[in-house]
Figure 1 (cartoon, rainbow, N blue to C red):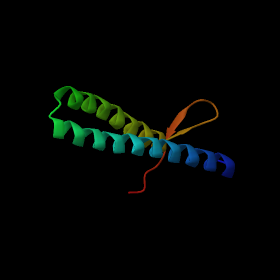
Figure 2: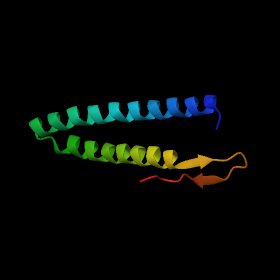
Figure 3: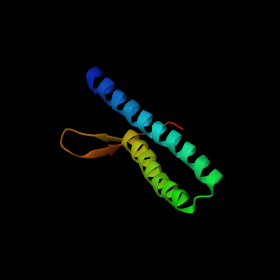
Length: 81
């Protein structure tokens, strides 16, 4: 991976994490308001949106673990744990 490609991928990752962070912040505010008002329907919408946030988190994690190759194949990156 070239330096330019690396920085591009890093910026895309940062954008996705920031977008997810904003969604989490909104969900927290909404959940507090739903709890205060005891609004069941609002709570259900928050849970539904939480599933989207979780999906985004997993998509970010998986995209970080995989590496696309020029021939269209995908390789799993080695994890150093």
